[in-house]
Length: 428
Image (cartoon, rainbow, N blue to C red; front, top):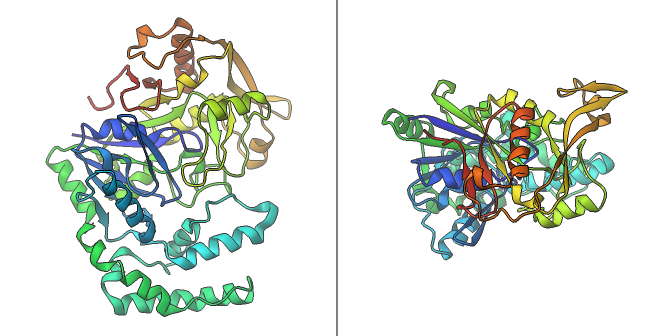
């Protein structure tokens, strides 16, 4: 059986959690390969809403083993808060496995995240303040603390001392904050060791052995393509690679084992935080999409910026990730509209540009060129086949498929697991 990658195709919040949850009813392993508790998923099962920040969405699928891969940065306090929340609601988390090689978000990462954002002022990136960027910076700078380190107090203390030698200089002399005590950090991390130990495994070995047995593995990327540190709208991006290639690195599953790359895209576009957004709406229609779509961040509650569907971005994401399929979500949000604009190209300095502009400056100044499609003004939340959709809704989907360069295999018409139209099976 194949390994399937599920990736956001815009700026996140596209509905990856629902898609992974749907797949999770049929697969054996669901893996989170990147990000941390900065990337929330909302999953609705049987009318019950679950907001997941660090755990894979597949943890709600009884047949799947959820895995936190080596590419994730783990905040242990947030991890166990989420586990406790799920268990209090009757969910079973005992099958969760966490890579011994995953890095930890420790309290000084959160401190640095917040003070750095304030220090940047108008140039702030708009992070969640949860320490994700500083944790990844330490990982690349070889100052990181890994999950396995908390099982060896001597190693843990040495690593914390090494990291704080540098960071306390920065906190005290640049940011005028108090120094962080080594003992405080060491003791805090050690307090989780006994509870964490049963979950820790060689997850790369676990997943490859599962594939050898013919079992099905789904990898759900956090954030999205346009937030990828290499391929996104840098510097307004996350600190990892939430693209299909990043899923291989963050899980230890080689690229030759990936047979399906699935992009998740909303029927319109949203973005949280700072950075360019060509189709953003600043009028009543932007407020309408925000209200009707419930566009507020799972982690922060911040209202999401809203705009029309951008097929330039969709084509770009399809190319970067090698998408075989798109899942189109939140089509029902558009149901009351008489007309629906779609961005088909950009105007950059008076010229028409149909692919992503070469430079950040050009993208920042790009203005959308729209093609308008008639709406359907019918309730579609109960529709379960493509043929039963209103004709104008069918035409809208087919237009997006043509403009985006990848087939629209699943259509979301509501938040619940069952509110989906399957045109092409994502597994078979």
